[in-house]
Length: 457
Image 1 (spheres, rainbow, N blue to C red):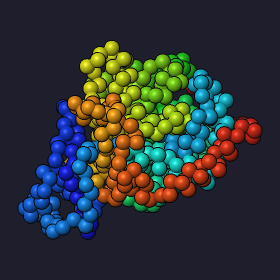
Image 2: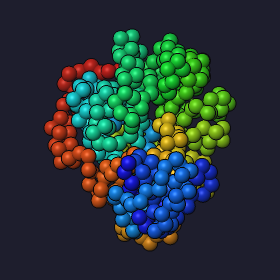
Image 3: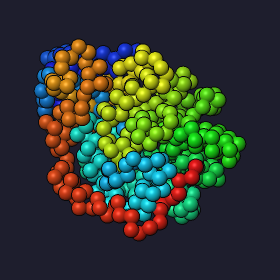
Image 4: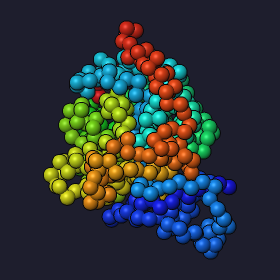
C-alpha cells in the first residue's frame, strides 16, 4: 500500500449545493488510489478515523508533496470531446456550421486510421493532463486507440465509439462490440454507447441501442438538439423535438449524456424531468459562439428540473483547445448573458459544473468530482501567484476568471502523479508533439474526396 501526503496546501471544497470554500493549511492524505483524510497541516489522521475506513493508520508517508502556496482542486472533467480532433486544430476556421461539417470536417475524417487516431489522442491526453483535466468523456471513432493513449498517459476516460446509421449494421455492431471490450483494458477506462445524433441515427437503431444499454448497463452518449435549427427541423420532418425522439426510442429511459442541447425548449423540460436521475447534459459554449449557433445550453432550465450539467470543450477542430478552464469561464459568461442576470451562474456554481457536474456526465458521480475521503485521488495543484491572478481577493473567482492552464503545477489521477512541476511523468511530450506534427497533414488532406457523412439535420 502506498501512502502519499500533499502537505500545507489550500483545498477547494465543492459541496453538492451552496457556496464553495477554500480551506487553507491542509494536508491531503492519499492511500493507493483514494483520498483517506484531509486534515489541518501536521495533524495525522487518528487511528480511530482510519479504523472507520477499515485500515490501520499509516506510520509514515512514502511520498510528501509540498503544497505550500498552491490550491488543490478536484480534477476537472471534460464532459464532451472528440479528443483525436486535435489533429485538425485550426484547419476549419470562419465557416458556417453546414460548411464546417460538409466542406471540412467530415471530408477530413475519411482520412482516419487507427494510427492517426492514436497519435491525436496521445496529444489530447497530454494537453488535458497538463491543464488539470483528469477525466474526459469522448465520442469518436477507433475508440480502442483512444483507450490505449489514455492508459499510457494515466488519464481517466469514458469512451463512446461513434456510429452513424448510414455506415450499416456491421459498423454499428462493431462499435457496440468495442464499447463492450473497452472496460476490460484497465480500471480507469469506462465506456458508453455512441450513436452520433438523433439526425444521423434512425429511430430503429436508437431503439436497439437503448435496448442494449438497458440490458448491459451502458449509458448512451450522443448529440441532440445541438441548435434551435435542428429542433425546428426535427419538428418539421418528424412532428417531434429531438428530446421526444430520445424518449420514444427509449434512450432517455436507458440513461443518456446529451451533448449541447442548445435547442432544448421549455416544453421539453417535463420530458427530461422524468429521466433526471439518469440524464446529464454537456455544455461547450465556445463552440456555440464560434459557429454562430444562436443560443447556448439552457442550464438554468435544466437545473430547475434536477438535471446535472457538465462542462466540455467539444473537439479542438472547433474549440481549438481542450482547456476546460477556458470552457468554464465561458459557461459563466454566456449563461449570465443568456439569462440577462449578472447574479446567475456564480463562481461556486461554475466550479461545481466543472467538477461534480462533470463527474456525473462521466458516470462517475460517486467517485470523482470532489476532494473528500473515500473518493478517487484525482486532483490538480494550481499556482495563483502569477500576475494575471494577483492580488487574490477570492481564490474561487481567480479559478473561474483568471487561471490559465499553465498555472497547473501537479496533477494526480487515482493517486498517481501524472504531472509533476508542470511536466508529464507518463509520456515524453517532445515525442508526442513530433508524432502529431509528422501525421497532421494526412488528416487535413481533402484530395481523396468523399465524406463520412453529410450534415443536413
